[in-house]
View 1: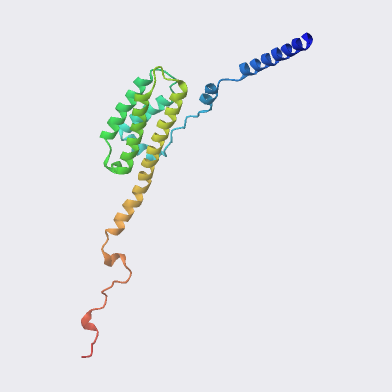
View 2: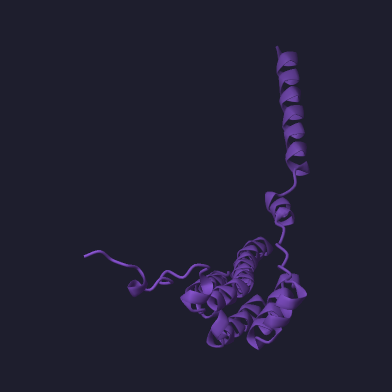
Length: 190
């Protein structure tokens, strides 16, 4: 009977040691998820559209700051976010007439929301996983803003063409004028 208890205790001891080895070899879940988060690339415009946006100084400054924020690893995150919020404020105060509409303003508001959320809710020190998740949201919001600017620049040519065509008098646009026959030239029986 003593031998059986000895073998049972040895069996329990070996199984307990094997379970500890399995737990030590598994990597931490946070390390894996941080590596899996991929930051989106900033959109690139055509040369002619980029030249048009280069005239908007506040936009070029914000884009440069966003690019630096994307590449930055760690650092003083609250200072970076304050800088981005300052650039966003200048951008929203200096929107050119061509881009001054509700769709552009709403995209700027969404970007500002994510910047403020990150600035106000970020723990101190900022964990890398949290920072990467927030960077994805901020970069996505900026890309949506860029896409809206692209749509407006692409449609501006169509709008100009439609305005030009619609401003021509009716007689010049139509091939057959509606009032081409005078009333008195048609004999009417009474």
